[in-house]
Amino acid sequence: LLTTATYGGWRFTAPSEIPWVYYSPAALADATARRQIVLLEFTAEWCLNCKGLEETVLRNPRVVRALSDTNVTPIKVDLSGQRVEEGTALLLETGRITIPWLVVLDRDGKQIFASEAYTVSQVLMALEVAQESP
Image 1 (cartoon, helix red, strand yellow):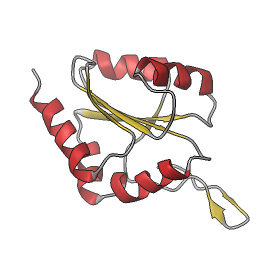
Image 2: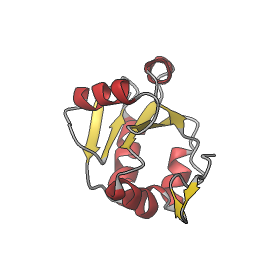
Image 3: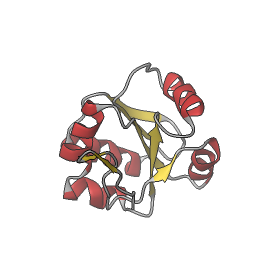
């Protein structure tokens, strides 16, 4: 679970039922080597749109269940954290320069979904398509 930090009544990182892995090149390489479906959430503490999507989409019980599947590795790429340069490089590799940004990779590491304004049904559909890929 993520820890919660507060400052002046503002909650910055909310706890989550999703088993997030924080991004590092090694974490992504490990998930890919294990042929996991990977969901990359590019976010930052200062990104209000990111927080809105986390609250309305990623905290949806159906999404939480899907991201808790043993075949899925949800990776949080926090662009306000310790690996900003590496995370920004990965963001650029996915074809994006701004956040919010959500990417789903299939078992071969191929990008099958990417969006800056995603819905519950889009995330679930992308994960389902990734599950069906060989």
